Amino acid sequence: MSLIKPYNSEVLFSGPPANYTAAAAASVTAQSLVTGSTGNYQQPMFPGGFWLEGRTDQLVSFEFSCIMTGQASATTATFIAGLAAGGQAGSGGSALLTYPALTITSYSAGTIYGTGIIQCRGAGYGTSAVSTSFLSSGTILGTGNALQVTGCAGPTALQSIDRTSNQWLYLTVTFSTSSATNSCQLASLVVRGEN
Image (cartoon, rainbow, N blue to C red; front, side, top):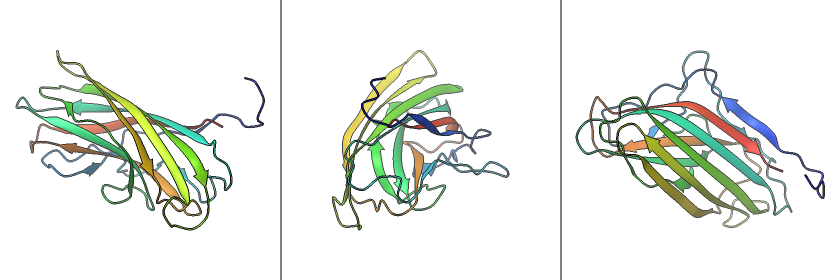
């Protein structure tokens, strides 16, 4: 570490205490992966003022892993990471990253692993466009049968966040087919403030 700047890296969130509730299977709409249950309602949140006005070098990284099952017929899953004004968002909010659709056909308790970074290009005041500007990118991997899949997301700009308000980091999944076999459960989510 060069110690040129007096900032430290820290873990902002490491959880949840138990796997989040699995996404509802028989649906082709976006479903929240951060839906809690009794005693398990923790979710990463950036409090108002976390993004510091005048700074252009703040960076947050995150990684997640899910348990995935996919039906035998051709099926894909699309993941979205974003920020919302309330917890457990399944829709709405503001997307940071839309990962490419992963083929999950015949997955059986497979693994999905994703990463992302949020670069703050500048934090200002108010809610008008570009008052606070984020640029995000990430990767996603999947394995669950003989087919291993990979993908990259971004770089994606998000310029409509009010840095003075609380913002919850959320993840969603959307299946291309409706089947009682399809399932996705978020088991691990780690968020770091890198500086």
